[in-house]
Length: 557
Image (cartoon, rainbow, N blue to C red; front, side):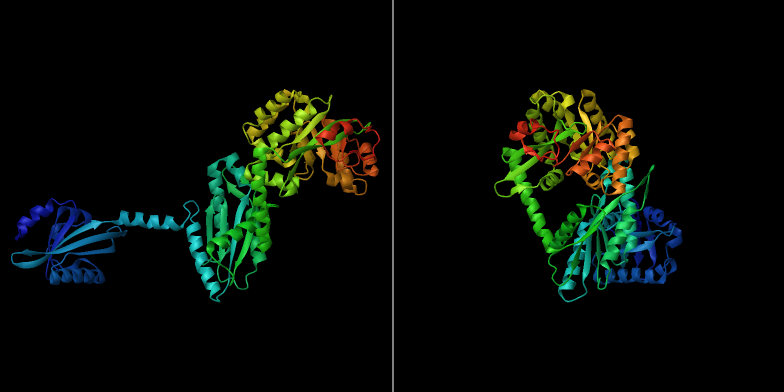
């Protein structure tokens, strides 16, 4: 055993940590070189001095109390505390003290380890556990924790809360076009806007991707509609991201947390159901009710049945609606329309199963089936062309051009007899890869038709910039054209501009002789609607095509 200071000092001088010795009167007896460097002192400045001479009174008192405990119990004592270093920065120190005997007197031997970085790292890990690293907002874990407390409070008769789920409409376009740095900056800005929209005690969370949540606690008397509308407004204001002023929107699902609320997961599911309903029209908010669950359950049933049908091929069919030349009423082409009859669900409307297919990634195989079926059916029918609707989702598939060309080759159908109908919004929002794909198909002879023109951007000047062969005027304008001046003006303007740009103009939804007369006078090239024929099954197509379609007004099929 070492009992003299001279020998202890030789040992302690070799230690890689700050070490010091104090006597029973709290006087410094020794400090090693590492201790001098760490504390920024010289040994001569401290040896012989008490803690009160070196530290603030409260800190000196804590040091003395720790020394006394070691001297009384002769046990090793570890303490951790935060002190200010010579530059004023807060440091976390771990001090380990033990009692040693020097020349027959008890002394305190202490080692000091700076664990500031360790504690800061641990604090950061704890922070990350309940915060989103990008925006600094709460994350899903923190949200559910707060949600559990809000549910417990409401169940106990306390004040209710309100949960908002939302995501940004059009965010993917910003990410794909301008890169993830721009997307990240947009998310940070939107998170800050949400944080400013509620009280400091309310929870604002980013729960994944472009999805956010607001939990407004103790929300008795909250004007839910006003807050939801305010959130919609916040999302619609331009975002200042690098090289771009982004314009987006949002969809919001709302669920009250009241006395009937159950688990956090169930409340989140309900908010998500309301959000799903809101996204059907976008840039709106929807308050949850029980009817939404029934609708979502039906959608899931449709999805499962659709997957099964795509695997077996049983239940799908193509119907075909003729397009006639306006000048003489001759049928020049048909539009292929998917139909689905399921043994359990019955006849499922296209507007329903196509939407489910787009949302679930099934639109690719469904669209390919329609394309191949339509090409095979029309190939032997003279010079008729076939128009096939194409989803914006399909256009983002790198395989799409190969699928189209493969279907033409397999059916023996010349490319000039195929039209791909694409919505105005899909083309306007198309990225560079989609534009290249459409140009590639046009070079082979496939024609591109702009469907539902006027319902999206309604800008006639877009036509001169779009790489298309034909525009279809939406039925809403066609049916009102004979009686509404604004609709009539739109139909005439599109027809005139189409003629000037060398584009064919089609009017869809023609149902009356009055509409027919107006559309011919306005200069439309082709017409489609129940006035000529409804969509007919493939097996009845020859009968319709062979009908003297120059006699409009007689229903065919």
